[in-house]
Length: 228
View 1: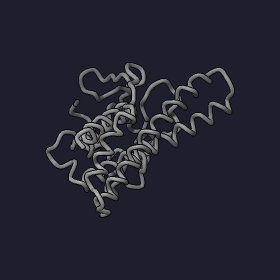
View 2 (view 1 turned 180 degrees about the horizontal axis):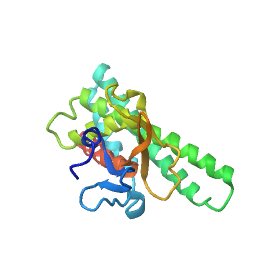
View 3 (view 1 turned 120 degrees about the vertical axis):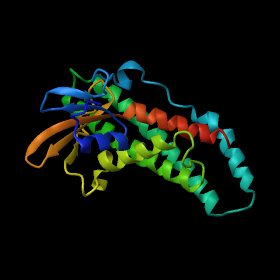
View 4 (view 1 turned 135 degrees about the vertical axis):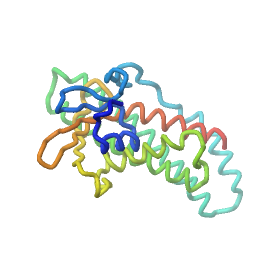
């Protein structure tokens, strides 16, 4: 990363899933450091979600392992089952509405606005339910420090805290974080977040790739479920 990058932005990159940073004072992309250019997941590989039916046997084995015991652990596995399904459905709806909205580029403006709003709601669900899955995996000792995916899960959770449910911003962060959650209609998978200085609008723009975030977390959770 270029050495003139603001230390607060550097810390934000380390804590979250940021994939791109633009310095609006110099009018140039400064992260990633190799060439400052990032191709969104939507443009290069939209991916395919896991088939939920392929996990049915794993969940059945887990429920059978409890026998007649109805305890907090079983309840947390039930919460994990429901949270993962809502995480999955949120992305399915985001993708459906994003594509539908893109197809309305020269069509009905009210339909475009409707699809765009629904996409924003689904985006919230992806990060909200994804964060819930991470918390439950940790509570159930299925995701522990040093395990595969642990660091990414922490960064995913901080992305939710700082950009999606951004009332969780640290009080000592010197900039104002302003997610542009209604800019999801463009044909990429980047959420643009404006970073304002007290007396300067949009000192930096940072971006997270919500398709990439979803698929990385889905892989981590599915690999754990398949061990049941």
